[in-house]
Length: 258
Image (cartoon, rainbow, N blue to C red; front, side):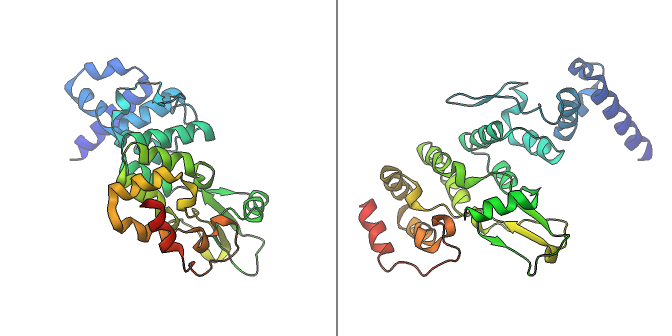
């Protein structure tokens, strides 16, 4: 067992450091190792760097530029994210859009659960604009740490949800609408942290036609989700606290989709 483990580790290092995909043809062992997603992720990060491995063609239908055949399954993307692969905000949103187009449920769940640490100044900026509901410690301590979602759903929510509906991604749609329930699992002292969570995405963020199509696809059960995320109940409208549901919210939704 020890020899096998050592052999695996050595062959993996050789393959990754070689930066030559043709090495996989040297032997069956190399070929088998090269097919493992964790190894492929390490290979790509070593070859292109953590900040450049997610090169994406940003057009109407975003696509991976590097080794597109390798990126046909979500498992590799998840492993790249686990190993610290990153990109600029525009490409990151394009990456998320690709996940929606391909119905990559596990990858979407992973990316929604990424929360980045930011400075107090940036945290105050987002809090001041009333963009996100947040949990905070009182009184604020000097060693307080600040976290926000990697993907700013509020900024891209309307277009992203719209695409999900257009492409008939029911499971994706539900993930986006339930993102505000995500509690990040961070290795921190929560008593010394302030966290901005995902905002609620309400039906008011979608054109009427999308709302009708949502209802036609998912039926009466979707009304509960829509009304739970109604602006009257959500901080997305800029309120500092949740308010009671509008008495006519259910009636308004029924009228809208009928």
